[in-house]
Image 1 (tube, rainbow, N blue to C red):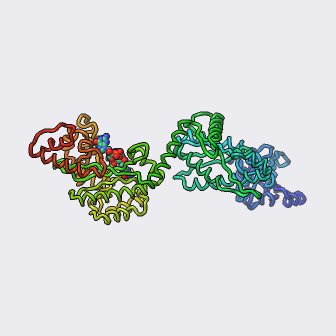
Image 2 (cartoon, helix red, strand yellow; image 1 turned 45 degrees about the vertical axis):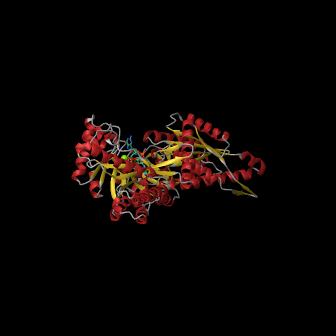
Length: 586
Ligand code: C2E
Ligand code: MG
Ligand code: MG
């Protein structure tokens, strides 16, 4: 209100001008406090005039913290602090009149100017054809992403995408068709990346897609695990682009060549990283287009090998190339063989027999472990039933399960079916789990372990001591068996620390009424120490290497024959022979 400022004798004409002006006016004292506020200013600030008066001008506008608002003459574009906080132009003028020094603030609606500025910013940073970030914004985003990757220790991938034979489309169908195609590519890539991100693991894989000009697109993918993640995104992009598109009369199939570099694996500056990515893109062009390549030859080779391994594993399932080998377990006191562990092998044509460490990880990453794991359980149960029919004593069967298999909804019922179909008592099946799986104390794990318990199968912790050993899960999940990891057994009996670890695990197992199995026992001395420490069972080359199912019955008969003979003659065998077990037991 005008009167507040002009208390003594308000001039009616001035007052009318102040009250009805379309511009907002604030009259402030020397201290910056508002003495009078006209209706237009109150409207722009978004508050009642009476609520504005008495407050410091800096509290009313978004311009730094209160008190730091310059009260000298000048202009600034700012926003009202009150909702909806529209943009305003604020102009301050200092003056001194008959009743002292004052500051007059003129407030004008600046929405239109702000819109124009926004549009200019859009033009400066975005490509008008596709709406994607342009070269200048791309460089900013790349610099930020590189800094984040370094700081957080999570690699990022930079990809260059160049459409194959785009020039031909432009020349033959005209520029308008070319533009439509580029828009289509921008949209397809955006949708594809959104889909990729929605299935990415926790934290997502933030990405920036840009168009540098012409038919050149770039993609920054952050927070990735490694080259495989980048390869996965690149192949999804190629797949999405491969869908035919109708442009005018023509149906086109677009392909692209992609170059990939990884930062900070390739620890270079921004321009060098761009150059490397470009080089990788040209490598894809020279490899016959419609493909991706990494800048580093090593990465390219590793990813190619991995991709071909995945393909070969998919075919291996169809062609039945997996086999199971069985490794016996022996009771340390009596020397009897009371069980076997089923171990997966892959008969890869042209490569021989591949051990599981070389491919189980890939099976897990690709989800192929589900069908393969189901096959392992079925095949092992069938084998056990076949040994039963041959008249072997009722052996126990151990099977390894990966964490990934726990997300298999029907795992428990599948195990139940395999047991029933083969007439096997669930108590004879032991499921080997890793500590890391049990540490994943989530609903899915708990309910799966519950169903195992209800089924009546036994549960063992494999490689015990190598993960996060926690006693609480042993009790909570009623674990039956602990398998001491090979790494602790290897240096027995010379290494005091390992002896102490074995001794502690055995004591723990005994106190909690669990069976303790030592893995990787290779010598009589190791078995001797373990026996003295009170270990229940041993498994390792000292008893036997894993062998094909067909060989097991023969081995078992020979083993028992030798054992009986040994008992009769009480003669001594050499340490490297599996029969030394009996010399130890005598
Ligand atoms: P694991 O369950 O700890 O199996 C024991 C590994 O130690 C086996 O290797 C076995 O051949 C090896 N080994 C046994 N005795 C000795 C010994 O005296 N000395 C030495 N140096 N090694 C010995 P393998 O068969 O290569 O299996 C490696 C791992 O692959 C297994 O470790 C298991 O974690 C995994 N695996 C095997 N089969 C399957 C399967 O069917 N499913 C899943 N998910 N994983 C499997
Ligand atoms: Mg195992
Ligand atoms: Mg093990």
